[in-house]
Length: 623
Image (cartoon, rainbow, N blue to C red; front, side, top):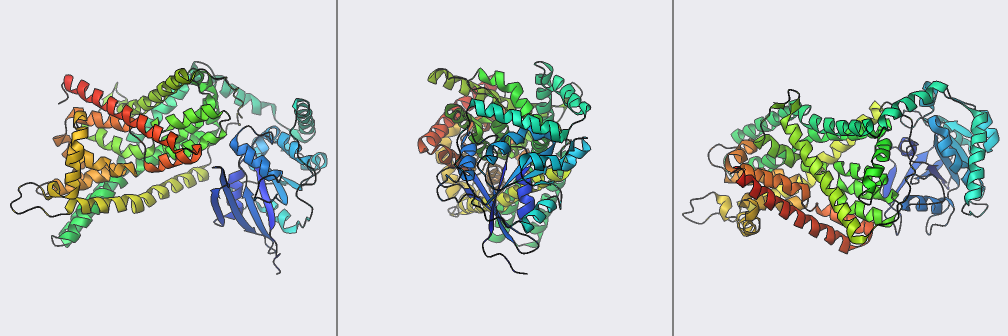
C-alpha cells in the first residue's frame, strides 16, 4: 500500500446546525488540533484522515456560515479561506459542502454561490437517516445532475456514518487548482436568482410529506406564541433549576458519604502529623468538598445540551428578540448568554456570531452576570446550609426556588446593565434578526452522553489540577508558620493565610464577611469552585475536636448569621469573574481596558449589592 506523499487538503463548509463539526469529529477522531486563526479569535479545527488505501487527507472544519457574503467574524474567516484570500492559509483542494438533509433548502444557496468559483466540490447530505425517518425522499441522481457535483450521504453522529464520504475521498485524485475564478460578492439581484435556482432544484429532487411541516408548524404555534411561548420558556428555565436540586440529591449524598468514609479511613491509618493534615484537612477537605457538586453541574448541562439538540434554542432567541431589543440587544445575544450559564468563556466566544460590534461588546460585558456552573457549588453549599429543605405549595422545593431567584437576579441585572449602557451610549440602529429555525428533533442520546462525559472530564481535570494545586497551596499558607509559644487559638490564625484574612477582613467586614471568607475569596479568582474547597480547608484547620471538613455546611450554619450567608450569595451573583474569563475578554476585544472595566464594574456592583443585602437582612432580624 503506497501512501500519497502530499496529503489532500479538504475543508468542511456548511451552515450552523448542519452537523458539520460532528462529521469532522467522526472523520478525524483523536487526530485533531484546535487553535485560533492568526490575527483573530475564531476557532480553527484541523485534523488528519487516512483512507483505507493510504490516502492522507488534511481536514479543516470551517466556522459555520449561511453565505460567503459575510456578516460576522466567523463568516468572514470562512469566506477568506474558501476564496484563498486568507494570508498564510492555502486554499483547500476540495470542498465538502455539508447540508442538513432534513432542511436542504437552507444550505443549497451557499452551495450554488460557492459553485460559481469552480472549486472541486462534493455535497454531503448529513443527517440522511433523520430525513428518511421523516419521510423525506431525496433524488441523489437529480441533485448530482443539477448541481454538477458528486453527492454522498452521511450521518455525523453514527459510527460508520461517513463511510460513503471516505470511499469517495479514497478514489478522488483531483489535481485541479482550488480556485479557478475569483469570487465576487453577490448583489441583491444575484442573491434572488440563486434563491430561485435553489427552489427549482428542490422541486426536482426533494419530496417532503405534507404532514412533516404541519407537525412543526403546529408546535411552533405554541412555542412562538407571544404569551404561551414566553410562559413555556419561563417554565423550562424554572424546571431546569428545580431539577438541579431535586434530581441531584441521591448522587450527591453518595459522593458525600464516600468522601467522609475515605477521610475517616485516612485519618485512622496515618499518625498525626504533616502528611495526615495535608491529606485530610487539605486535599480531601478541599477537593472532596467540590467533587460533591458534579451531579448538579451535569444536570444543568443536560438541559442546555437537550434544548440545543432539539431545535428549541433558536426559537427561544426569536421569542426574546423584541424583549431584548428594549435594552439595546437582539435575539442573537440569547444563545451566547445561555451558554454563559455553563461557563462565561464559551459564552463570550459565542458572541462572534453577532454582527454589530456594539451589540457584541455589550453582550460580552454582561455575559459574566449569567450564573456559570462554577458558582453552582457555592450556591448549593450556602442554600443547603441556610435554606430549609421543604416544599412550597406542595410541589416546589424551597431551595430550588432560591436557586431560581439567584439565576433570575443575574439575568435581570444583566438586562439592567445593558439598558444603562444603551442610555449612556445612546440608541443604535437595530439590525434585523435572521435566524435558522431548524426542524424539531428528539435529542440524540449518544450526543448527550458524549457532551456530559466531556463536561465531566473538564470538571474532573479542573479538580485534579487547578483546584488541587490551589487547595495544597492554601493548606500550606494556612499551616505555616507554626503558632508561637503559648498560643491559645487555632494554629491557622497565626499562619500566612490567617494574617492575609485579617488584613482583608477590614475591607469585607461591612458586608458581614469574616476572615475565613476573605481568605477563600482570593483563590476563588482563579476558579470559582475553589471557594468551597478553600472554606473546607480553612475551617478544617481552624476547627476543634473531631470536626471534619465534610461537615462544612453544619459548621458555617452554626458560625455565620443568615445575613452573612445572604450577603455572600449576592456577592457571587455579581462578583468579578475568574482570571480566565478576564483574559478571554481581553483576547476577544483586543483590549485590556475592556477587561479591567468589566472587573471594576462587577466588583462595584458586588460590593454595593452585598452591603445592601447584609444591612436589610440585619434589619429584618437575620443576625
